[in-house]
Image (tube, rainbow, N blue to C red; front, side):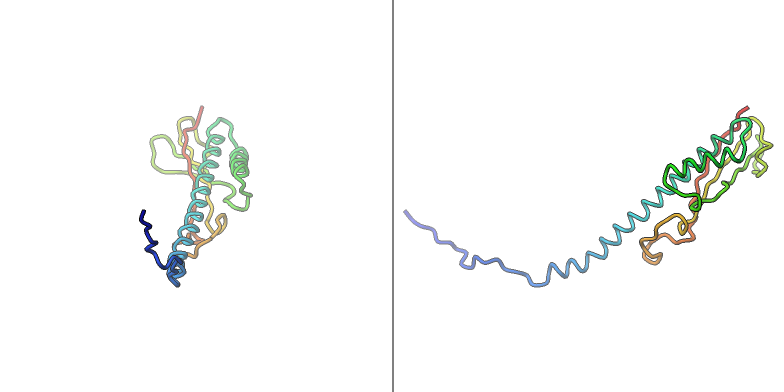
Length: 158
C-alpha cells in the first residue's frame, strides 16, 4: 500500500490584496445609478398611468348627457385620490375640449357638444410637483420641468 502525500504544501488560502475592494469601488456607482434610475423612471411611469386613468374617468363623466364640470372634476379627483395623489399634485380643473364631428379644430366650449362630437379630457402635472427626484438631471434623471400628461378622447353620448 502506497500513501500519496498531499501535494499542496501551502494549504493556507491566498488573499489578493485590494482586488475585491477595487472592483467594488468601480462597479458600485454604476449599480447605484441603475437602481435609482429604475426607481425614478418606474415612478414616472406610475404617475403617467395614473394621469391617464384619471383622464379616462373624467372623459367617461363628460360624455353623458347633462354632464357638468363638477362631475368631471369629481371623477378625476376620485381616481387620483385612489392612487394616493393629493389635489395639489396635478392640474385642477382638467383641460376639457371638444371637437365637432367632421372638423379638425378643438374648442374649450365643451358644454355645447352634441351627440357624436369628440370630447377630450387632459390631466397634467410636472415632475417637480408630483415626482421624487432621485438622480440629478446631469446623470440621466428627470428634470423638474418635465410635463407629464394623461389624455383621453371619447364620443359624446346622446
